[in-house]
Length: 389
Image (cartoon, rainbow, N blue to C red; front, side):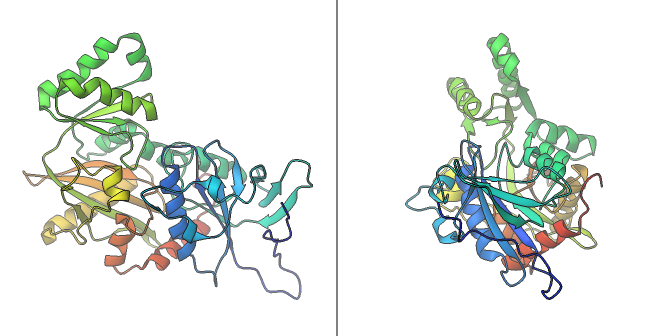
């Protein structure tokens, strides 16, 4: 591959003004949410103000190779119900991008087998739009902390808590936030005594009734989730969840309305957006992956709530943000029960940013356009000091 068209360093010299901040948009990754991450990256690349920022797109393949990719957002869309992949966008099938691990340098290097490595210049901030394990769960955030590079979104702890549904619920409970009934099945439990593990789930159904939702404990985008109406579908649902994560969580169904609320870090602290409601999907048994991304089930923005209910869920969303020590952004998902109580289901520390995603839609309804939203996230990351904070 020729390197003549690769991005080059734009350092300041005595007769040249300071360069624009360079944003590395990192996307793709090794999780089952790879394709949705690519779609999200396309939307973010399209929205970044190129008069204010230089952009370096970096895709991570399903195998974990960091690839220099084309800056072509139009190729990062779902086409004919098929999600895109980094491999289709990579400039080379072998070349790799290496981030610095030395906090004294933010130089990004590109190399190919048999070729001299090429310096792509410094990066000032990373916008990681990876979803799921190996990107949204604190792993990438830890690498960036070691590198001393600022990044958009939650830090190591909050990212890990936001990815693991068990510990997320434990944190929320400790801060007085209401969560629904659940049990967790760890890999060792299932391997050593599947009958006892299965009994835990059956006991949950005995206490709270069917249906149950069987989920990977550390996945998102509703991937790997099965709604189980009786005992006959349980083992198949467990196998599906374990395909994505050996640790699973099983939740009792809550009767109520699904309400979401966005939180965004402003200069004076986190603020909540207007909430949205996810109505029951007519062609799906619940708001699953296809309903979210393929069939584009429409949410209602703003949610038809009373002023008191709106203020309450906004307050709870900010409390969840603070409880998990989040930074930058969060989408908080709740159930509004028939008794009028908000029960938090989960948070997403890097929610979907696709054109149909609820997080940007809620903020647009709140008066923050998509472009302004991306800019605010980048500015918040650039303001934040690296290291312990």
